[in-house]
Length: 493
Image (cartoon, rainbow, N blue to C red; front, top):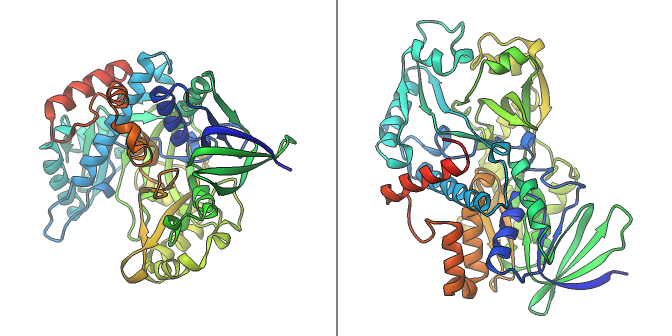
């Protein structure tokens, strides 16, 4: 038997998405009653955990996969510009929370860390120069530096240039205002404040078993792994922000909009430096070009992080394949997600993405020596004894129907909602956490259209996001002003 009770909002998954949406909803309507359910025993233990994501604070400063090169050599920066704006929107929201004392000590979750793009070889150098010329002309990337000079690059990233052949053609761009974001710490801070508010409860070891229509709302059945009595929560609105687990829960809702969606899981590993002297000598996020056929989350980078207050140095991620949808998931996740409605798109994606399949097989079969060789492209002096393997997070890329029901593999995030807006799920991965605020603003507009249109909610949204309703991409003055203000509040000047 399930103990039954009522609430306004159910948030499934205690990650950055649910934390962001929860705080927004309480700011917009303090009377909302919110119940949060997390299958693990702590918040932010899956995709939001520091070891399980890139932590770049994806602002498109250094990620080369956001700036594709056309056949004529031109570089398309549209996606990079959009992502840069979305990260600035997140910074505005975090600054609002700091100013309201809902977040404290910004350096616990965000620190200034230069973002560098690094390439070698004639064709790649030409690409990076063209990319620099296109991006530096846009105000969202003001301050970007470019160099092909070995001496200059040695100052930017000494480990990368040490013992590198002096005649090797290399180049790099640098954005000094880049950041490192610990989304695990940020998420936990947000939930700590959220659960101090009246009408908000978070439940751990809570496994959501089913989601059923209940009139105009939903009944969420929850079983606990800590011995607590099972519950059925009747809610007016449900958000599924369970990372890789969102697809399975969305399918359980049975909404027509979920039909045709599938998931392609990609696992990851890091090499973690264990030598404090080496860690101390690197202070940047150095991103390169992905291998042919590699998913975007596998773009190689030599990455300075601060995790649990301690400086760390990672390289990777090395991609892999597992049928799990979550790091702490089941090997049956993928098989159980295959339905009649998504079988054809999933088979189509498999047949049309042979290079990706080959790439993942190669990654799985890598030896420690193979991983070290990849690291040496970015740190020529790397030695095996200074590094150890760390398991990274699990990502589930979106598979959806394309033309004529053929499958299409999407490397991004997407909100899937019911026609009445009473339930929504976030599917996909990168850039994910960095753009959580922008994603939740879009969700609010789609799921709470009447409320969002009111003068009261409009004013509150403008207070939370000063650029709300305006485009930073087309308003250079506003973008500069707000970037300066948020950098000051977040102490990343």
